[in-house]
Length: 187
Image 1 (tube, rainbow, N blue to C red):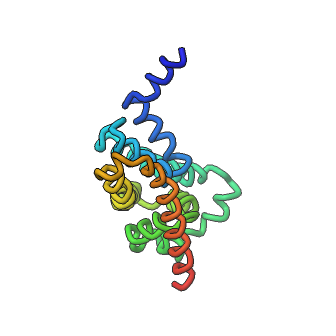
Image 2 (image 1 turned 90 degrees about the horizontal axis):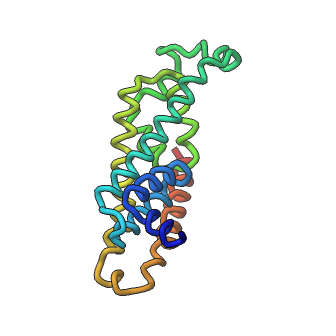
């Protein structure tokens, strides 16, 4: 029975679903895990890459939907009623939407607030969708490549140390995010 469960768990279809679900919890760890699974040839690179994109984009659209449907809360609507397309907060969210979403993608902790605010303020859905898709494609391409390329090199294929890429990548992402957070305070 254990062998059967192990064999099923390493099927590419199950790994595809697992990567999508993992991206809802920790996006960066899901990207690193998908890249390492692709280096081990347990899942193809296009399948791993598309699972990450589907997971992250659908999670971001879920945050937008939470903000959009939060408009049914009477207390919250009293706070937001004054926000019209001419209001300052609306302009903060919509002006340079792609630039704002790209910035939010690289700074941890801002996605929930900004994406739900976009839904709450009824930022045009297709503009939001395109901006999230492009910023996610850029972010995933960079992080996935930084893990996959060294992990699939000849050195890594023959070395048991390749599993050290996971903590190394997580440290790199952590310090990159801290650096971005520190610099964003100076804006």
